Image 1: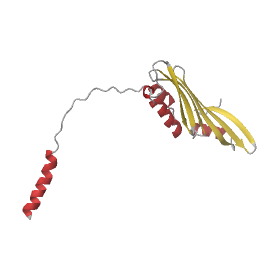
Image 2 (image 1 turned 90 degrees about the horizontal axis):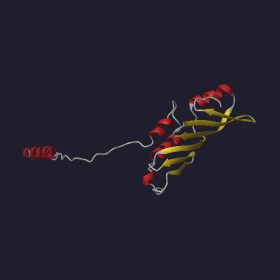
Image 3 (image 1 turned 90 degrees about the vertical axis):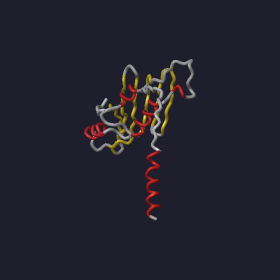
Length: 169
């Protein structure tokens, strides 16, 4: 019985050791580059954006125009709409798939802390009932981010505009 157990143990240990033959293959060279890195870098701010906003912006940046059904060699630029329940983005791409400009609008997203604190300091006792986050991106001009807020205090309503740092416009 000892011989059978030792024999099975030796076979069990030597089998996997012999199976570790490594074949080396030369792979073709692959170049990875981010076409829309400028867009994503300009969207980053000190405070992170709401999750739906970041998710849709990443989808816009990762969109492969050349693999889409819309692509034809005849056009110089393409306008593509992206929708989610919280908002939408209209993006203009050049023929190489690079983002030229975007117009983005999101409703009732989580506001940055700087915006919330600025509203609480200037309008104590008021509550934010609606908000809209509007972003304009242009390749040459950069990015412009604004918040349009509706405040209520009892039967009074007030509309204010703010930038991403909590400054009133």
